[in-house]
Image 1 (tube, rainbow, N blue to C red):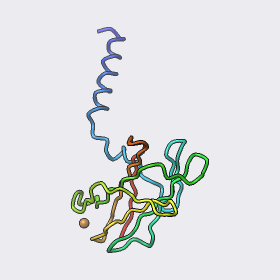
Image 2 (tube, protein in one colour; image 1 turned 60 degrees about the vertical axis):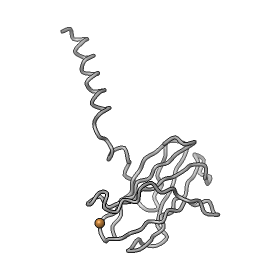
Image 3 (cartoon, protein in one colour; image 1 turned 30 degrees about the horizontal axis):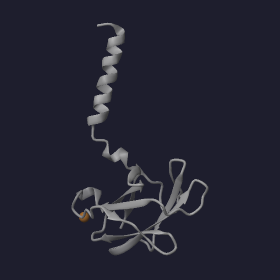
Length: 140
Ligand SMILES: [Cu+2]
């Protein structure tokens, strides 16, 4: 086999692997933390926090979205999925759309039913297309 065809074959194998390997964890970028600026490419950024320190019961996750120039933006759709990583699926919320309040803040009620580590996955959509997947972790 010539060198060229070996490289072509290697490239092909890598492409196939990239397509079939489950890359779900990496697909959801781990976010830096409450109150920190999280970028979505060049065109958007956001900060997130809870209305109060999350504890048993319902806590509200808040996201403030900005455009590339730092102005408030409300033109994206955001979907949240909460669950406990240690018992994946045990308390999975499924896809829950954030709701915009009058001040243009995105809100998601999160039902915390057990102490421990929780994860919320975020999916950002523009015109029905996913432009970002991210996840945040916190402890109760
Ligand atoms: Cu649990």
